[in-house]
Length: 329
Image (cartoon, rainbow, N blue to C red; front, side, top):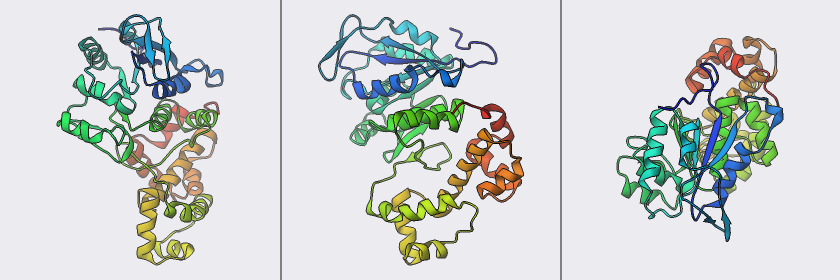
């Protein structure tokens, strides 16, 4: 069994993206852009990147390109994280050698990420049996029909199953990759990469398993935009449904319906996530005490902050600060 740890205390930061004939270039490009570009401001512990060819010789990519890579499936044995871009066709068989290599990698501790239709590769390898997963909305019915042991979630951006993660279509792959950076390096590092990509750093969802619901671009979202901005600007205020509905110029019932349509969640849950996000940022970037952070972020007390922080992120504020405090922006 290959050793995937650089040292007992230092995780394996080698990210390996798969490449194959008829490669989906967008999802592959996401992996390269997020993990393959040098980022010296992040320090020596940042990711290393390699490409593993599934097929031998010259391969074709979408858009009429042809390419070769230096490494084959043997690179998978060295990876700490493996990325499967969109597969060459949801009805295309997955080579058994690839399935075996992915199962071995999973058994020895590697993390596996699929982007878009890449989920069909993980499913074919049996790595999603009994798990929740997602893919592009065009393929969710096919995934359900072909792999009945998978709980397919059609309306989310990504699913974090711990060491197996799946993203919905196209740009949702960026969301998942940024989420992984948040897991590994904290919010500040993820925001820095998002700025380089010129994308929103985090699309909130609030599910316990870090399942982020897609935020629809609706009339309701546009109408509530100023209200959401005002809430984020004053997280310490007390917001009741009646007050928010009045601010939006709606009845309570209409406001609740439109708020959930715009954000995918309730006002209370959305506000809690914004406050926790503010607390995380302060833990990373300030020397404020836990009580002061709780007050500044609108969570009120250190006890309340600790409770919600552990419930949402499965760790304590102190442990989070110890791990992520002082990261480069």
